[in-house]
Image 1 (cartoon, rainbow over the protein chains, first blue to last red):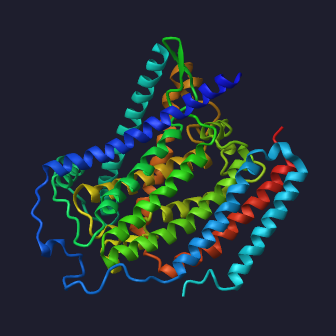
Image 2 (image 1 turned 120 degrees about the vertical axis):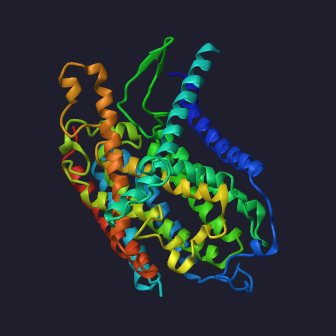
Image 3 (image 1 turned 30 degrees about the vertical axis):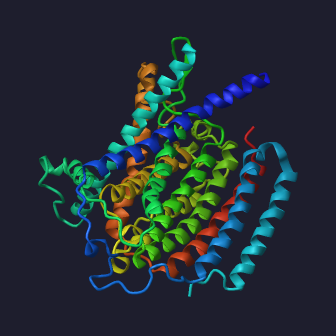
Length: 127
Length: 357
């Protein structure tokens, strides 16, 4: 196939997806708008105050939260990137033979080293 | 120009059908869940609206549509409105690459179409993983924007939980990719044709049964379902990240959760259980001499697998108690992850020792 044919093929494959995203977005926005037009609106301060089991809300809700969440987010980013590297390797596994297998075993070995390090340092503990 | 018009019209029709089926399934899943759990607990479930309560979801939907949409004081209005859409859209658009039936080609006005998949892109599974991750933003933004402590805690929990189990989903899928050699869901499903012993859950050279178990557990955790429903644990966080939501915005979070359940069921069926392939070679209708109608049987097989999975979600909800958060994280990082990693190692060595051709 020539370059322009390839581009056309590519576009014709992704165009329905784009269309689907557009329709899903439109469904969300239009439904919210329609609902907004027909619903009653009687705001009052008691109704609008955040729910706190019936008592008066105290202090700001956007409070500091444990740094634990942040550590897990960082671990996720690192490990997820390593997993993404596994995907192209898995797809062409048949064609790259022993070298591909050994190289990826080394890569997974590095992954395991990082994982064991995080485990030993206690980064995977929640309390 | 005419060709383009026909193509767009066909795509629109496909999208319309898929959209309709998904939303209809979501509607009746809410009823099915209440009914199934009710029967498991020796109750009747909803009985008032329509015969045996089958019109209950319509009543619920109408009620939510006409309800007042409350934005709590101090909330970030923009993010508060954006979050439900951000949760809903990724859950719906994943269906664009799911093959619901055999990879047939029909010709209409001289243009070829594939009726059972909206678009067979060669990065199918990657596309789904990428977009479902965006759904987590909807949850955490909704939790933060609500200006409520319960919502914030629920959103944080959801974010940490979803990303932890996302990792295991990603690892579990690699085993299947090794055997299939493609990211396209159509090609992966086609590679499993010829009987249940070719399904990747049982396949030679290394059955992906461990990957399957890891995938199913992680999928339950990713959709925030019992026993991993910590982000919306009603006994401690009221309703978690959607405590402050009401009306249609609340409904969107609800639809997103159920659409995600259907989506992960579709992926599990396509990757591990042979998708639209029957558990025996060929199809019964094909063997009887009507090969042109074989697709009916194949679509039914796909639907049957998906609905079995959805039943599993309800079954789990009726059976298991909720985990504690530290147990949840320990289970994800210290049990699931090593199993998934070991599965990749063993599968890759087995696939090298017994190449396909």
